Length: 339
Ligand code: ADP
Ligand code: F6P
Image (cartoon, rainbow, N blue to C red):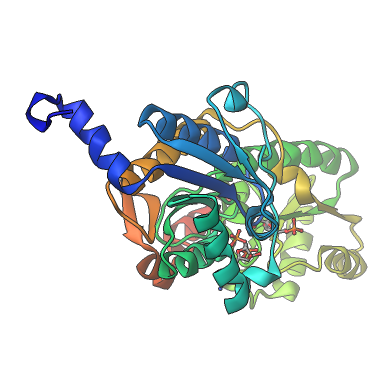
């Protein structure tokens, strides 16, 4: 087509076709509700830009095993409301080795994948960075229930997981009140306490234990439980983050010291399942679309984020070097409200 007869859209598509023709997409690490909405957005945005899309099953593990399928708009129909990931996910040790990374980059080239969207957490982004260094254009989309990615205020899956946990904790509180017990409820989060903090506030817990404040004083908790009992409180809820763990032994120690029946409930993987909330679907859709657009603009080694009310992108290395801390004020509020 003669260049001066082209519309702006045709010129844009022409420029894209020069650099990126095929986009690959994979989900990696722990699954998170909303990952399907992100996959769907990647697929449909790429197709609408005239690109081909390849889905890689089982994260980097599937990439190394060449589990690669073509994806059409219909393949992602009826998926936005589904939990889990239709591409499956995995953790893959070989991707941590130079040999594995080189093989993965060679497989991307073999399948003509010149732009790769990696939906996952920090670990998955580290893998994407390695691939970018080996010439595969990559963009990361933050998908984890843990909310522990420093470059973004939001990670896909957190909203659904925290609501699932909140509802479960409400139910535990009902039975805890009936039996006048102390309940220790363990929530996920790996080394981060965001799920614990948010549930602590949303469920009105008496105590929140988070790895960020790991030197908690168990004897002070025991004294507090006794004082609460004297004041006529019918239950005592402790939200314990997975990063502290040991809930079952903690329950035994507390029961022994207080004489009050104490039960531990570990919510576990139920927090990772279920239909994504509206927030997870919408943020995932926008972030997935944005990842494709960044690749189309010739960007690589980037990660999408949501910061201070804006969708943004960062260099992966810069993003991985950022630090995120539990906001002290929020923790203080949780303690004040537990009085
Ligand atoms: P998440 O992405 O949720 O943080 P993981 O930390 O388990 O989950 O990482 C997911 C996968 O990303 C790992 O199984 C591995 O294949 C890859 N990965 C993690 N760290 C690195 C690294 N430093 N270099 C290359 N690949 C990595
Ligand atoms: O990163 C998500 C997460 O659910 C963490 O909260 C938890 O520590 C971990 O994954 C559990 O991993 P797995 O599913 O391999 O047991």
